[in-house]
Image 1 (spheres, protein in one colour):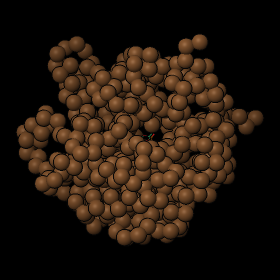
Image 2 (image 1 turned 90 degrees about the vertical axis):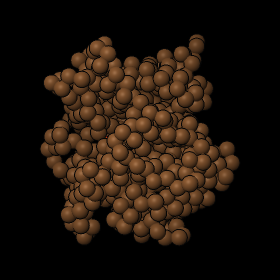
Image 3 (image 1 turned 90 degrees about the horizontal axis):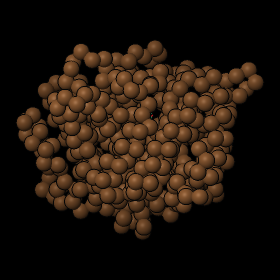
Image 4 (image 1 turned 135 degrees about the vertical axis):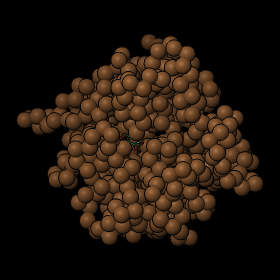
Length: 485
Ligand code: BGP
């Protein structure tokens, strides 16, 4: 039989600290930007990017609110106290890898301490020990929609150059303390999302900037993240022999709605714009067309003398990305638009969609993989892909989720096809193997897991973990290395 996936293919799942851990004020943890996200029920599509609802007033209110009532990311699914049980379930699924993130505020509560907090180090050491027990290879995101609130307030988040130094110190503490457990690192989750939700991604509170200065501030913050990412990559290579550092982008391949050259041009612009983020981290320089665009828009990025050299010196080793959907673009303003993760696009009539409007496009994954590999010629890692759905517990206690199985089956076929075309794909981590708090809506009811967690949007429930029907299916996929889908 011809194998569809490479022998060492890293099958697994992905989670993020702020969406699972809970224990937001335990072990000396400081407040993070994620702890400010309040729960709003009945979000409409236009409210969808719930991340953006943060204001100075809401932050002030949240900072003095010691409860987790309306702040579901403070509760997560209490992975902090359930990590052993959860990792045992991941091991039962046969995971080769688990993608997780480290909460900056567990190690550096305000971000400005000079030494890491021992309780934070102890927690992650226990998690990594547990993974080691089952030979699960960790892949760690340093910054996943989370930074100390203190840095957001004091320096306007990543807009402030000072944050680079604080982040590098945090990263180096991670490499020094966890380097014996962790070989694969990612710097910034979905670094491109800074333009869509600057507070969640970079601690920028929009109302602190004049309307006509906000865009420039966001790109300035992004520049600081690029520099920090390159510096962290350099330190990682120096501190951990054989380490591999990846960038992480939201892959939103954009199709033209028609073959009208104007639609094609619009889609091309969008694709070039999305490529910008990985281009800088892979090629170590700003694309010419982006510099020209900034010039035309009057956006001036302040760079220190050595910045261009820093970027050039430490490109990433591999490219990781999330893939949920493709986008479609058109010059026709009358066409209906749909939410696409935290972006918006024209509704593609050839695709079905989830309740949240996310259009399902397995072929788009094959296209994205081929396009990325052709452009960068570096190993690729899909670190997020999955289907959010409202699962129901049947009377007999079972959870039947054939829609999720069908979703993954088609995406895995697309991956196998891309591999057959020559794409170097090294792994796949589902978002998310266990139900968790949604990043955009802060709701529990948008579920992604093979493992159900008994908790509703208001935080009621026993937190009991239950296997869904998709659990057995994914277990067999991993067991057969993707040969039985
Ligand atoms: C990605 C984020 C994740 C995650 C996922 C699903 O953009 O990196 O943190 O949550 O999207 O999004 P949501 O939780 O909004 O359904």
